[in-house]
Image (cartoon, rainbow, N blue to C red; front, side, top):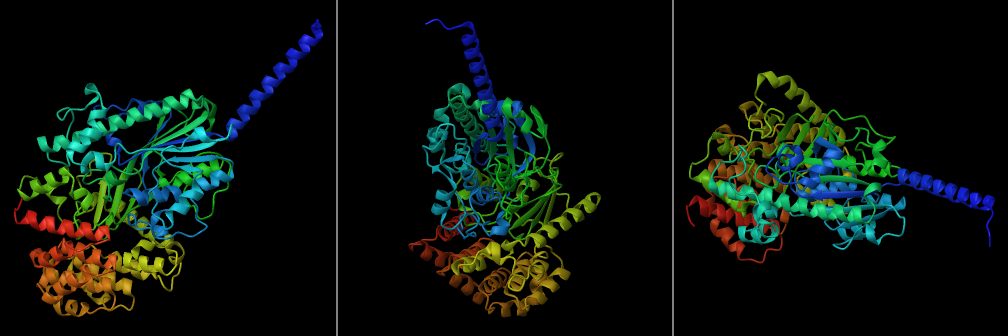
Amino acid sequence: MIVSIYTRLRLRYILFVGLYVGAIARQTYANERPNILWITIEDTSPYFVGCYGNEVVSTPNIDRLAGEGVRFTNAFSTNTVSSPSRTSIITGVPTWKTGTGNHRSKYPVPNFMKGFPYYLQQLGYYTTNTSKTDYNVANEEAFIREAWNESSPRAGWWNRSAGQPFFAVFNFDDSHQSRTMTWPYDHYRQEVLDKLDPEERVPDYSFEVPPIYRDSPEMRKQLARIYNSLNLTDKKIGRLLERLQEDGLADSTIIFFFADHGEGIPRGKTNGIDLGYRVPFVIWFPPIYHHLSPWGNKIVTDELVSFEDLAPTLISMCGGEVPEYMEGRILIGEGRDKPAEYLMLASDRSDNGPDMVRTITDGRYLYSRNYMAYMPELRYINYMEIGEIKQQMRDDFRLGKLDKLHQSFFEPRPAEFLFDTESDPWEMQNLAGNRQHSTRLQKMSAELKRRIIEGRDVMFLPEFEIAKLAASGQWPFIFRMDEKNFPLKSIYEAATLSGKRSPEVVKQQIKMLTDSNNVVRYWAALGLMCQPEQALLPHREVLQQTLRDPFPPVAITAAAIGWNCFSDKSAATTLIRYADSDNGQLALLSLNYMLYVKNREAFVQALEKMNKQDIQDKNVRWAIEDFLESVKKIKGLD
């Protein structure tokens, strides 16, 4: 059959129009419905990544994303350890509002608070996670099921329906603290070194030792683990990016890359300073989405970014309506919020190591308030203590091999830190007492107080109280708004004195021991625990009376003071009794105080007996192990 010229031209026209309309449709669809790939790594600070200036590590895949995309120099985890950090990410709410700041405490969040991928599902997205969750919420399994279409080692974009946009998270754990410091060296060798070719391995002599550590062969052996772990991480990221390319999705997928918090080495992870909070963070836009980047492309920005910004950003970018309870900034799209002047960050209990630090940063200057200043920066946390690098540091400290700066990490902290992270990236010079920075200190301190009070920081309740709320079916997120039962201004008035050391502050704290509010009295006692022994000697009688306080956290804290300052045997009996309590929060509180008082030998026999019991609460078990090991070290035993 002969087709006329007219017919052939008409068919060509129809085909051309069809292809053109199809291309426009695909372009419009892509513009409105980007695929999103999240690449998360663990326990990593920017100092150890190539695109941030490290010339020893080999991270070509991360560096390529940064070179072609947007590299952020001021991105921060909301917390300094995994489960609180990931909870802020998945809920879009800081943990000091949800009450989930204490590592793996599993307290409830309101039913209306969803994991943010749930909202992407409502927009038609296929959501997958491979496969780290570690969300610090009650009923975690149900929470995960609702958030993800699939969360497993096999999850990925490849299981979605044809043409369906995806949000896929891939978590690489090769840079985790387990590899960089905690595992025995032979295990690290098997899981990291042996998976790198000889030319890919970083030898012990090839890098500068960060000045916050003593430069010794033993320390170099441990620090090399960071570089090799990151080299392996980057290789695996490269394989993932290859698959994205092979599946024809690289040109329609926006890629986010970041770490879940700071470096998993001593003074980093779990510690409320810049090394614990600051993370590498990159967003890569394919050409079709270059217009979505408010920063441009192939660029470096110093805009402040916090993990609570991620959920609202993705929901908005994908066309959804951000829930009211999410107060983070929208970073991308028409709803983009103006850049922040400050970020508020938090660090609370990690495993068996209680702490409470609140931080304000403008990206350059970082102000941290240490509310439990009786403990050093390098406090006892079992998962840290079993690492050879931490053991080496403790041995060097005990043998007098450390200089004044390095020794200070094992001594009680000041109430305030102020660091200039631009001129002092390793945070070695505390500017809090520097007159030239007094105005800045006052401004940042006032901003921190404003945010704590206005945001109703529920973590100012001792964990004993948060656990009681959870057991009674109450949500800390909602409870925090109850001014009658949670008078935060009065509580903060007591808490803000904690760590400040002077006779005048002691007088105020002694007076607060008679307050009618349990939590005010707790913070008064905790503040007295931070005071030098000499300042408490005139107040022995009052402190002995406080041993009978009806609120257990107050009585336990008074007992720690009574034993440390006065060698009061009734105080020792109180500490031992609560250490053997069935209540895990009270037991841990008592055991933690035992780690920081004098004359610890008095508790050895009781704790050795407890250590033979079948203790289900692993934080209590770890605290006992840390105590017994610390006493053994003090005695010089092998």
